[in-house]
Image (cartoon, rainbow, N blue to C red):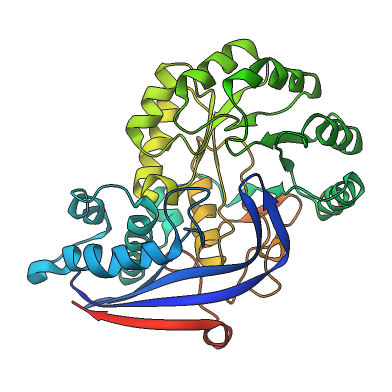
Length: 370
C-alpha cells in the first residue's frame, strides 16, 4: 500500500468507575487514535499510552510528538509501498516508544486487512470463535466495596477475577475474595511492580489462596528477583511490564523468571511481535494470556483475535466494553456471554466506528500528509 495521510485524533472518554492500581487512579482517558489513509483504503489504530509516564515511560503527549515528528516521516519517506509487516523494520532505528509504533502498525494492518477483504482472526489463523473473558478489579477504599464489585462481576459471568494488589492491600483482600468466589473460580493477582526482593518471603504467603498466578510483583528490570520468587513460591510467576520484545521474553523464560507471560501488543511494539512471542511461548511450553490496557472497542476487538491463538490458554483481560465505558466508540462493542467474548469477524481488526459518538468526544485533530 502507499500511505497518503494520517489523522491523529485525541478523544476524552469517561470511565464508568475510577480504576485504581499501584500506579494511580484513572477516571477519564485521554486517548490518541490514528486513522491512516492509503491508496487502497483506510484503517484505525489506538495508542494505549496513558496520560502520564507511570505504567511505562510513554505517555500520550509524547506519543503524539514521536509519531508526528519522527515515525510518520520515516514511514512515508520516498513514497515507497509498504505493508504492516514493514512498519517495525522501518522504525527500528528509533529507540523505544513501542506503544506509538504499535499504534501505527495497527492502523496500517487494519487498512491492509480491509483492502484484502479479510480480518485479523483469519490473518492470525486463530482456532476459536470465542475466548474466555476475565476481568481486572482495581483497588478500593474499603473491603466491602471490593467484595460488592467482585460479586457483580461474578454475576456477570466472568471466567476469572484478577485483583490489583499493593503493599497494605494484598493478603486480606485476596483471602476474602477467594472465600467469596470459591475454590473453583480462577483468581489471580497483579502487583504492577509494587514490591521488592525483600518481599519475596511475604509474597509466598499468597500460595495458600490457590492462585492462577502472581503478575509482575517486582520491578520490570528485576528479572533475577522474579526468578528467585519463582523458585521460592508455589504460585506461578507471570511477567507483564518486563516483557517488551521477543528477546526479553526468551531471556526471561531461559532464566526461569517467567512461568507465564502476559502479552500486550502495545508494550511489545505491535500485534505482529505479540504473535511472535506467542509462538515462542508455545514452543517453550509457557502459557500466555492477553492483557488489557483499558482499550476502546478498537483495541478490544484486536485483542480478542490475538487471544484466539492456541497458546492463549488462560482467560485474558478482554472484558465487556461496559466494564469501562458507558458507550464505546465502535458500533458493535464487546460483550460477555457465558464467560466468553465472541471473536469479531468484521473486516480489518474487527470493528466499525461509531462516527457520531467519536466526533462528540473528540478534543483535537491533526492531519499529516505523506
